[in-house]
Amino acid sequence: MSSFYKINQQTHAWYNRIHHGDCLMLLGQMPDATADLVVTSPPYNLLNSSGNGMKNGNGGKWSRAALMQGYDTHSDAMPHHAYVEWQRECLREMLRVLSPEGAIFYNHKWRVQKGLLQDRTDIVDGFPVRQIIIWQRSGGFNHNPGYFLPTYEVVYLIAKPGFRLAPKAGGVGDVWRIRQDRGNPHPASFPVELARRAIGATSAQVVLDPFIGSGTTAVAALLEGRQFIGMDVSEDYCRLAQQRVDAVARELAGTPSLAETPSAIEVKTMLEPAPQAAAVVNPDS
Ligand SMILES: C[S@@+](CC[C@H](N)C(=O)[O-])C[C@H]1O[C@@H](n2cnc3c(N)ncnc32)[C@H](O)[C@@H]1O
Image 1 (cartoon, rainbow, N blue to C red):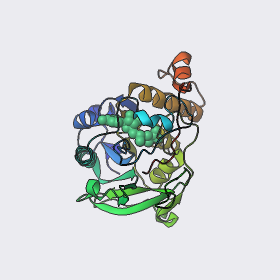
Image 2: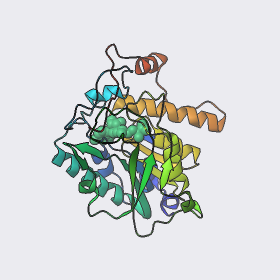
Image 3: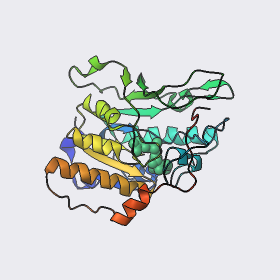
Image 4: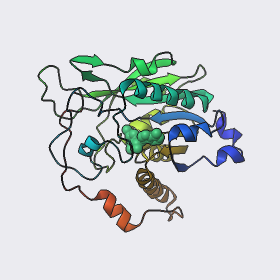
């Protein structure tokens, strides 16, 4: 891939950092072709739903149940049309900052709305979708008698014409059976394994995630020996991501990292259970 070899002062400032801010604002400041690959999972706009998918149960401050209140600083309840337009603008910007051999692994979820399947065609329509990967993740409860328990999410592979998989990487197939992430204080993290599989299937050197949450994509990039660029609108999630990145970097280097980590009190607060917690009963309705 080309961008790794074009590192200059301007792009270098982006690499191996978690950037705090709105991704459209940050992407707007990034030069073209700064990254080789995007691996990301945007907010799903779950709280704009015809059902009341999340109620009852227990969990932490940012538990999956806490998505009832949306993310730390994003309500996840945009009017559907505005949400679709926002995501389309994000995809346009992601493509712009990708090298000509780049691709986006865009994880999203289909759901049932007022009894009918809502896929995400309205978001990806017109973008160069090359393949849909099924992430078979299982899990969850479904008390809705109208349809089967959903056990998968999708990953749209949106690829520029020059995109190619690494040699022999395609043999793994297009159904990826990977267990959901567990024990992560972020309410909607995907597993490191999912991001590693995407990154490891490419020769990308610089991996971007504009919705990095707890830093999973950055961790996966480090473990795959690549560079990363992370962004999130929540300062607390950025801190958590930085903490995870530091831990992995320390492990890989076998030496303490100099990067700033949150204080013990900050970490404790992040992990503390909320007083009235709730669990995801049926996130798909
Ligand atoms: C589905 S989560 C990503 C979780 C991540 N894949 C992980 O494994 O932790 C979506 C993230 O998008 C962030 N977000 C929401 N609006 C944003 C915006 N305008 N710019 C950047 N990040 C945003 C949320 O704070 C949340 O952490």
